Image 1 (cartoon, rainbow, N blue to C red):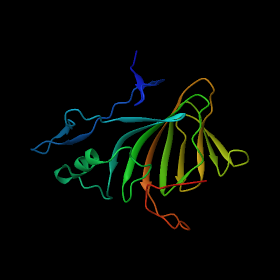
Image 2 (cartoon, rainbow, N blue to C red; image 1 turned 180 degrees about the vertical axis):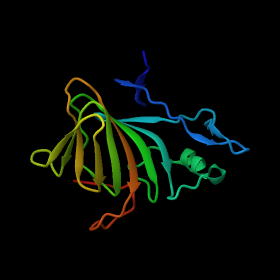
Image 3 (cartoon, rainbow, N blue to C red; image 1 turned 90 degrees about the vertical axis):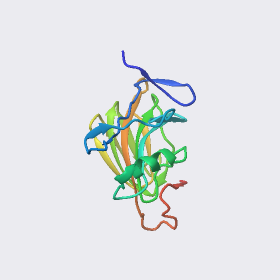
Length: 185
């Protein structure tokens, strides 16, 4: 049996633990797996209410600066918790939703590519009571373009998991386009 996801507060879920494998180049230019510094956790799971956010990788520039492992250095120096979006960069994370769980309604200065990889997730726009919604099943993709939204697990008995690639964006009409700011709704 696969190992279960364990979060920073010691709680667990029925989802598999996630492992991150980063590649790089050896001194002679061959593809190799990167060995993280001793004591470094590559996947940092953080529980936020009924959701868990697992950060797998971040970059602080586009294009990504891989020469001399500059992107790796920046990743390991990234403060925690990692904001939803990084100014001029990207964040790769998984979002685990507890059975029946939902996120707060929120908007970020980012474009997010979200893929459901386990369970069923409901994407809700604008408000919980009357906002438009779509039910996403395994393999479904949403492109979240800085709109006010929330995520809800469509099951009351099973966990759900999404993969999200979060890219910094300039959202028209927002006074603060500083990247990782969650705007209250």
